[in-house]
Image 1 (cartoon, rainbow, N blue to C red):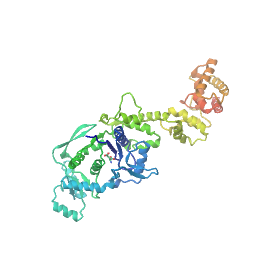
Image 2: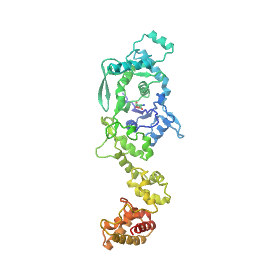
Image 3: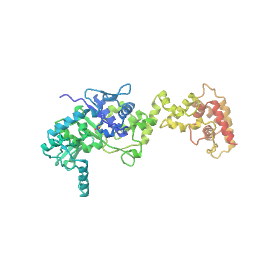
Length: 492
Ligand code: GLU
């Protein structure tokens, strides 16, 4: 028998942003497909019209594009930024499949696997209240499950508002076989007769997604853990039609440090916000891929290609994964150091726009902070002193430990003279300057600390800053001397 072509999908609802956890879902689906040289599809699940957000699909595709998560089939953007649908299993926008879903619902009714339900919202409300009052489990009471077919026809012909519900077994159990969780068994008597067609004629997720997954020949349904408890209904639909079940993989939740579900209240959950803040796509992919899975215990840095090659769905942890922002920050710092210099400047220089110095100076500042930065925007504050015309030394101690002002002044005056003598064009790099200043220290019989501390503080007016050699290299001769003069003047 020939092996089925592996096909996975990412099936977001266009709600306006992509939850960071869903990016991981998309990544894993992408890994499984690409590793097997199969297909990765993007399907837009927009059957809940009340949640429709204008432009959400476009922005969703843009975000996926930025994250290098391009599907080879389904919904995408053309070069002009317009939505297109590619592939021969379309349409890939779920609302455009309304008639297909309705046909499937009809077939289920014909097979006695689903039924029309005419219960009004008021009735359902009363049923629920009564169940609550009598402390019984809430849920649909099966009122329309066995209506007389002629009555049903009459009520339909009269145009009475209705939904379609699955006619689920009332006893026994069903076992879901999940790649990550193994076998999970559910009792049917705890599962409600799910609505599959709403009164507006649109299918709910449960029918729409299963019908589409089947029609689109999806082999692996990779989705969030929140869908695990609905899987019995999905298996019921597959089995009613006699379809082969896909592989199910329910990914664990992403949690805050306190183990609560990562939610908007506790922090940012929209992938777009991370991109806007300057987290690099490579850092985000690396970080998210390792939330709940790690191919080796001894490495944290992986390229997208390596992740594809190494991924193993069955090795994903069952337990929720903690979202450690420190780790994302660390990875971002790593990737900021890795990108080419021009891309780095493109990201960072806009954050120095407020300062009037020339571009070469700004570039030197940007390089100075490259190793010290988590997010590009940090540089505005971090480097402010470098752009401040007159520094204020009142908050810092210029002298070294118990050294006197006189001793500090002596070293600063000497440094000025030495700096003055550096060859402006050839020797102005921090390693030359380091060697040079250290020879000055040696010649005078001074100590490193008692010379370099006052020098560094006079250049920065900061408790902590890059080394004096790096600062001199960034400032250049003239400005370094000016800074030392400023410090000397305030030491009077
Ligand atoms: N539209 C569903 C969601 O956004 C998709 C779940 C699935 O992948 O099947 O949660």
